[in-house]
Amino acid sequence: MNLKWFTGRMKKIFNVDVKIEEVGYEAYDFYHEELDDLLIPADHLEKLPDPLLFETLSYVDDKGYEWIGGFVLEEGTKKKLFEVWIRNGEQIAYERYFD
Image 1: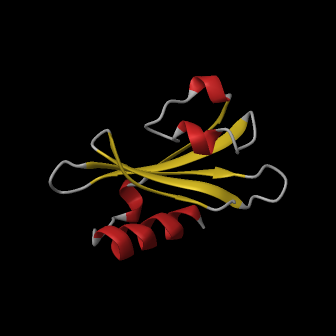
Image 2 (image 1 turned 90 degrees about the vertical axis):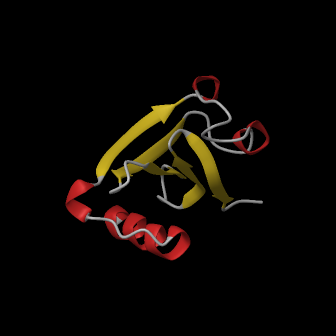
């Protein structure tokens, strides 16, 4: 499911075709103090669980750009709480799914 989400969002939002076999995946539990504003702005971070599960999918395109799509999931329900997009080490978009 995460691969379909990532490839679909990359095409829809950034108009980048992704080769599924070249997508990397990682998932980590983080405490708030371990994260910086590149991943989650502080004013959003304070509304998320501590620790939080942060999953990332990454892809390097034909031009050498590194794309990372990351999201925070609610542990019990696996509901998406926050989504962030990073290209070459810079945050280019994010979406929060909470009030």
